[in-house]
Length: 417
Ligand SMILES: Cc1cc2nc3c(=O)[nH]c(=O)nc-3n(C[C@H](O)[C@H](O)[C@H](O)COP(=O)(O)OP(=O)(O)OC[C@H]3O[C@@H](n4cnc5c(N)ncnc54)[C@H](O)[C@@H]3O)c2cc1C
Image (cartoon, rainbow, N blue to C red; front, side, top):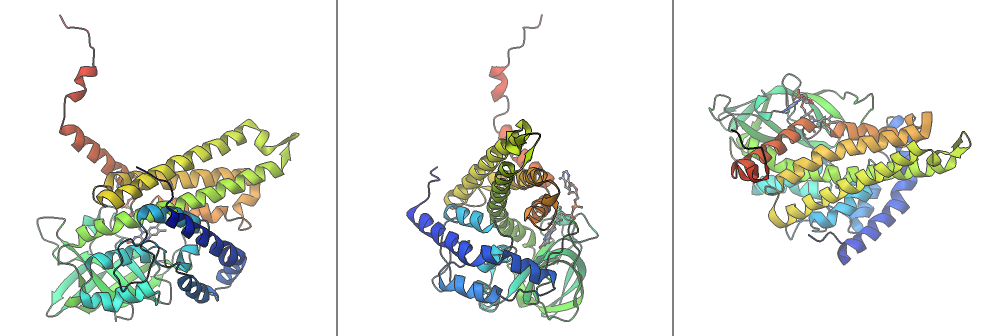
């Protein structure tokens, strides 16, 4: 495996860095003020998106674009350091049309949309004309197990009629979130619990779709929303079905691979920024006659943070390399590993940085509270840590079962008499 940056990556990195320095970082304060004042989408977002697109910094996450689709056609490995850079500012990925959950939704549509769905929904998403949401989680059932979901999608003539309640649906508070990819059950009595679900495309303005509220997470207001939504007799044409009826579970698995690695790439960037902030602050302030970094415990926190970031980055790069070279399915153990590892690393580093900043670290005067909050969210979003750990353990057991007894040669018990 070779993780060195290709000339293309180096060139793109320089351009993304310059764009961040010139257009994004100088607007962090303005973004916060506008969102605080309830002005969302913020006044400059459309112009910045236009500019990024005109500079060719657009849809950098999708490796296999078709000829008529706009984007950079980078591999996952090439995209990783770029995503890391954009992860330093929470809203930067949107500027490049590389923000979740739109990216995962575009990946999904790219893989499974029919020709007419592609024209109607994928192309405008790739063009950045509107945003999208993915609605799987439900308040009334443990949704880490997708077989639990209860939203019903019943076939009536040429339509499906949808009834159910979802929550934590990211992007749904955006006024221009125009399409919801909804997971529900079309065949709840199927003996195979993985064939009961389907996914269907529901335009936002469909009668019966109601956005109930946008709950805060860790008391943090997300302007794009993680909303609770009700579907009451929502009727859409059967042609809105994504893929085959009964394929919803498989589609969800396919969607989550790329989505998870992109989250992890951006997390590395957030943690890296937290470390940089911590290191500077530790050189600025003194207690008991020493700079903070000269206290052993602070130095240790800095060193551990560096080790943890580098460890996580290498594993993310390995997962990216595997996705490029053997495919997302073969890379599922690595993807589960990074999803279980990186958000905890992200929050741990942010937490240390907050501590080094003292009380200021908890205020909106630094990005640390936001960084921490998002890291904590990621321990749940796209599946809680435990589910990924369970998946890794299952793969280990399965692999071991193909060669059970192979370790016995290393055991040296005394002979029994
Ligand atoms: C900020 C944010 C954004 C989100 N965006 C979206 C979105 O856009 N669309 C969407 O559909 N969902 C979204 N989610 C929801 C997220 O995917 C779910 O919260 C997650 O899958 C867990 O489901 P649950 O909340 O129902 O928890 P439950 O399934 O009730 O699980 C609760 C807890 O049980 C434990 N647990 C579960 N399984 C196991 C196991 N196998 N072993 C041990 N312990 C276990 C874990 O500790 C877990 O946290 C988002 C969540 C957050 C926080």
